[in-house]
Image (cartoon, rainbow, N blue to C red; front, side, top):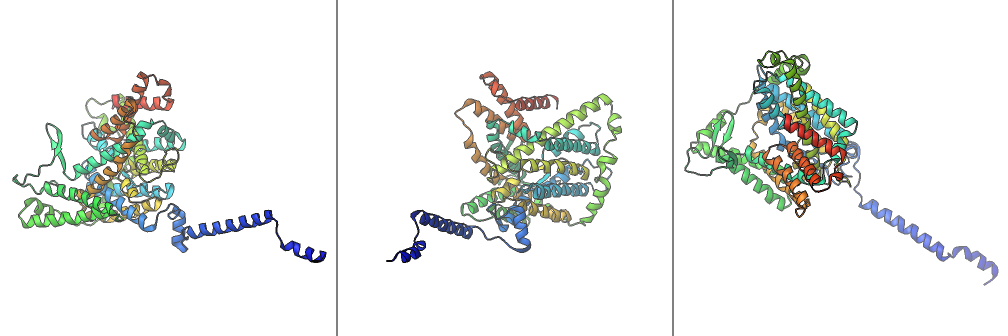
Length: 531
């Protein structure tokens, strides 16, 4: 071969280094192609924008899953519309329709709070007037001859929201969460699970009042008088609701075992159908309780409730809330006692709201893989901001503190991962606002099935507690037992933190207690001693 031919051919031959580089480029291209092929195809058009905004596909979820999760959450917490309205209807005075006014106020608080979760925090959680806080206002502040009015208590609620707004904007609320000891954090989901399961058992009448033991398991004695179904003051009792709840939660367990999507939602709907079928059979069998229940099912004009709300609840915090004449005219009350009431009531509402929210956020997010590497709920600051704004707007609408609901866990458990879940729940609340009579047709024994099943699922967190460590065990135990038997998430957290401080002091670990933990402990101690 001539020298010229060799020169012409040389450029066509590659050195080993060149061959290696080319191979790497090819492999990289192949890898990129494989990754591109494996990645979910982006949706186009309007729904593509919705998907991108909420991050549905990116989170590994789907529109179908988010919709089912949103519906499930709504079905699990829709009872608050009826329960809260029933509680406040007795304290909204001089109203033509106090129940309707409270129902609309509760709906508006839930809609605003849930939509804030959807669009501000973009998280699959929902908000509404918190159980426990509403009971504190109605049964402690208003029903014990204090002289306070419904409007006065809306002022306390508004102050509560403003304080939380300040704490959230300054970042202090997140630091408070981080100051909660690990043992308490691990116990929170367990306590919440037990707490909401207990609520479900009470709603369904499976657990009933008993004088000597406070609570007891319902009697299924078929020989008792009127054992199957009773009806009194709008409340259904007897064996029927208990049977519906028990069969409902078992059905959810079976569907979940078979990997049926939306098992909780189907359990609620199926339990509702079963409830009315059994009630119909009871009527045929001559049950007076079942007949009374059907006789009291009425369909009224939902717009009448809007009129009552506009007159008696909307903005009452501003034009009547700061008038304490009734309180001051009550014997024994003075300006000094009013100052004490303002401080202690605001402190109580703040503590209940703050730690109920923190506990609920952690408990719900831990069940949906929505925690960051440090174990903190993702977008926590935005969720807390949504909670604070919702509390302020709820007070203006005329309802008690709006907070993140523990029932949101039911939607997270079935796969909800984004704000689209909350959006669906919010839309359902909008619809329910105009269908107040129909919303009341969903029996509490049916919604109780969701609470019971979520309680089952949240018990799994008990394995994270180091039971061989006596110090951690007693802290966790006190946390979830006080939550359950004390009927308060915040009090359970407070009991856990105070126990942690005492144990740490007497076991030589006082230096491990952070300054924020000391401060929180002192606030809880003051709350327990003064309120």
